[in-house]
Length: 233
Image 1 (cartoon, rainbow, N blue to C red):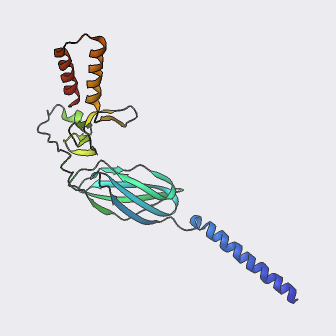
Image 2 (image 1 turned 180 degrees about the vertical axis):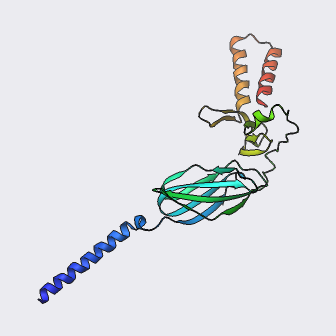
Image 3 (image 1 turned 30 degrees about the vertical axis):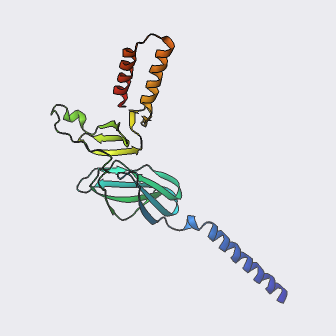
């Protein structure tokens, strides 16, 4: 009888241990979905872009909604899926502007939201020039609405800049060198040449002149001047 009691005790202990192991292993699937922590990270290289680190209690998908104070237009970050640690990026903001944001987490149709947090953007660095839209033809206003324009700063330090239809900078990327050319791609990304375009064109012009032997000094100077005008060098 005593032997059976010992065996029963051992079996109960093993069952309890197994249960504890199972509970620890699958605790993420048993606890309710909740947003545990939100951290706003200011990126020193760009005052219009922010990283938001999010920690959730379960593996899920998250997205961040943000909007300018006093407006109803809501912007959303890309969705972060498949984990409990998420990095979300706020973009397309304007300098010296008040925003609010919240995080939404979803799993199997269940959605939870964080409380609403404030976000105040700072002025853009002086190295990035501002643009002023002085006048718009009233006939063009409907066509320009919700449109964005890409340009670049040729001088050093340079940058790529996207402005909206009001002339406000909504995105920029600074560089130590001047940005000679920037262009939208078919994949909705930006392709740019930074810094050395003029020296390359100058070298090609000089090489062509030396190889063919057809250019007098005036023609060579003219060719290099045209290259400099094209690239801003």
